[in-house]
Length: 331
Image (cartoon, helix red, strand yellow):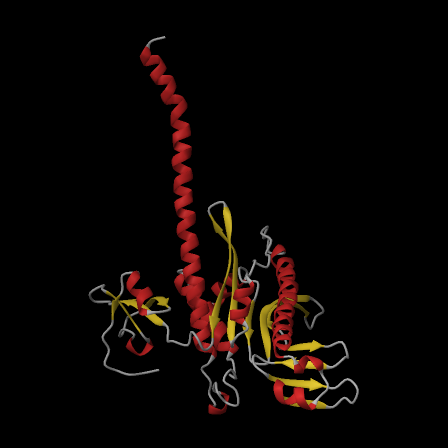
């Protein structure tokens, strides 16, 4: 065979392989782009929600009332911030249908409050006509509680404030661990380090157990919608759990979104105190097309639509937005 014949054969054999390699590279780049996009959207949503947790109407509910960690967590405002920010940064419409679709990819939203936690998840309920309806709603608030070896019930908070129900007398005692430890014969209250270990372990274990249950319910719910993806509880380090239960905050899961040949599975934390900085809004000037970013009170004029929400001015600048100069002061 001539050298040209061999060249033709080589090209015929190599082209499909080269095409597949190029296709794989394109798919990998697209998967990486989507992974980064979803992670940025999720983290910004959690941070935005964290900043909304502490927006209280009554002064007596503000942080610092009786405890440095006490706060009335506004779970409805936080949930609304999660969904609005995710929809905006994922480029979806902010309407009821888009929210319902987005919730199929969110197996749970958890708000860590001062004396218990709230979980927003799907749950089946019987309708008036006897049919079974699956709806997302807030489950009843769950307390941080532990029963010791003597049968005493200890209700924890995010600090040393506790409530103890004596197993022998049935009496209820409220106060600081140190004060009750010297007044009661409850061994756990007399050991500071052991108390802290048990408190954290009780909170994390309770949240994990409820999370496993609601994720199972979510799997049953989405299977009826035709999903073949199985939602699971991501691996969360103990350091992340400790950060979550150290103060009022929110935990958001986002799973099942396709990224190449795989599926996205991640979570994000938002603190009600550490991350209480105001979100930064990005928009385009309708006249010049220049992109600006600033806080809510600096937001554009008539005909302006929000494009994105960022956790900080630095994040907005990284996406090509210029800082908006606004003389007005606002919340």
